[in-house]
Image (cartoon, rainbow, N blue to C red; front, side, top):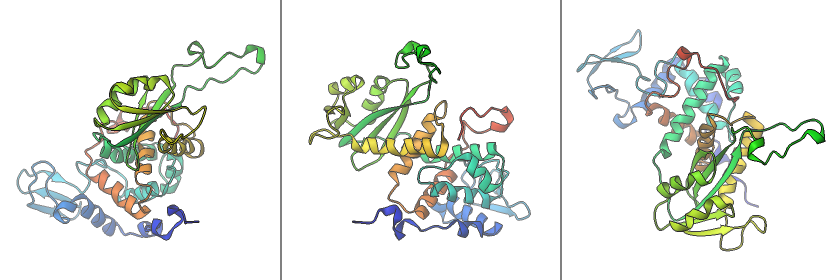
Length: 325
């Protein structure tokens, strides 16, 4: 039997020890090389793009010769206004990359010895950075679509005579959401969160290129897909594949997301459901890349991403954490 990629030597190209042993100067140089990779590590002003600058060594700041703007290695990135040392950010990225099924904020807070909210925000910033890669992406060819519901759990009453049919809408909380995955056969996966599978059809039509062949299950919400695409349907009550229709690769994504919820985060529903879903899509897309390669991709994504509009000023607004991680 062939060895699974994650168990092979090729999957292990990064050690946390290597990152943890970096000096402050080495970590700063690493950030600098990743941030300005296009100019071979030569800094340029994030405001005017000028390459000429002076360097304030005591504060590790650059001063633009054109607009006189002072900037650091993390200015204008998702790590802007950071307080933690640069090495801690690199270590957080390495830990994040090593989690095949994700990494909880509680565990990250213990790994870095920081407050839970600090780890929570940092992890979500990394999720936002890697998800930006597919923000406007489309898929084509043979495409599988499927949905899975999360959240809105209604606890059954203790006594049998007091219990209600939780499948009925009037007995539900209204918080239940469906994650819909659009997965190109042997390609990338795109994910979105909706109230129902039927609501996702317009998004599917926008993200799946014309001429593609779509595979879906027997759910009625997918009936409208027949108007826009050649659509093959599989009835899962009868079989999982019939030689013509199959959604097993979409189901594979949900297997990872379900395991992430059950074994790592325990609760991913609520306002941040789509963030966790996109993270798992990214992990699924790069499952054949070594942990060192994933580390480089995440670091590059974070240092080329603009400051987060969702998480910027989190502490100043004193928001409460609504979702366990």
